[in-house]
Length: 309
Image 1 (cartoon, rainbow, N blue to C red):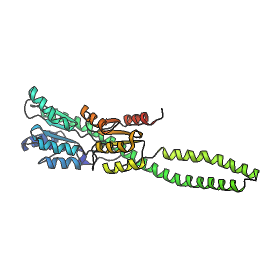
Image 2: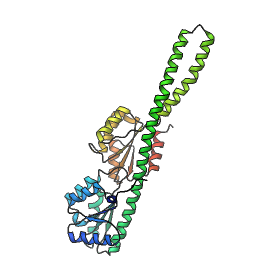
Image 3: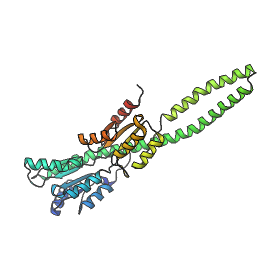
């Protein structure tokens, strides 16, 4: 099992008033939860990128510019991640304040809102719940790592298999065809050559089907993903919306324009709202999945779209 670094289990705290941040950090530390106070949004986002389990913020820390920078940082999460945020309201909220606060954090994804006044134990319980959710995401990360490692090993094995089987089979079939032309008048030898040809032909097709059925390629950026898709023409592509270079929407538009309906496009997004799904559909995606991804659901979708009939 892949070990989780200590930094990935730490809570990062951002508050407009340093006293609020210190009080929250003290309450968490007394409960045995590692917590670090960040001086500003730049430090907070840097810590999230470097490794963190939960982000704890006060409502007053979420100014427009702060929220925009945080949204940008969250958009670069890997497919397994749906970073949990706990936001503490600034004052006992009225219904109108609740609606405005919910709207303000709506584009931040996985958010838990806490109303004030609150007992420290309420804060601790909320953070513990977010930590448990993050731990499940780390388990998914470990599973994906093992799957990717296994796929790389499998691809290396299949490449070796292709070399060891395809090349000799091709040589055998070429030789039998040449000999058949030269021995066309020799009925007995020709019969033996045809037996060899009949036996090697289905074996060659079997090897081709085996190798072609298990090919997996990975792209590290949006432009690389487009290049690979248009060059390799895969049956399906699973695309993270928060890709570097160009985002997943633009990748889908370019791939769909180049390959049309011959490819199935699956979007991985941190947002499950109808607007996000509509954007994905307009970009050309067939299906949208919200992170963290349920691997069984992804497998079922690929089988449903790729299996004949």
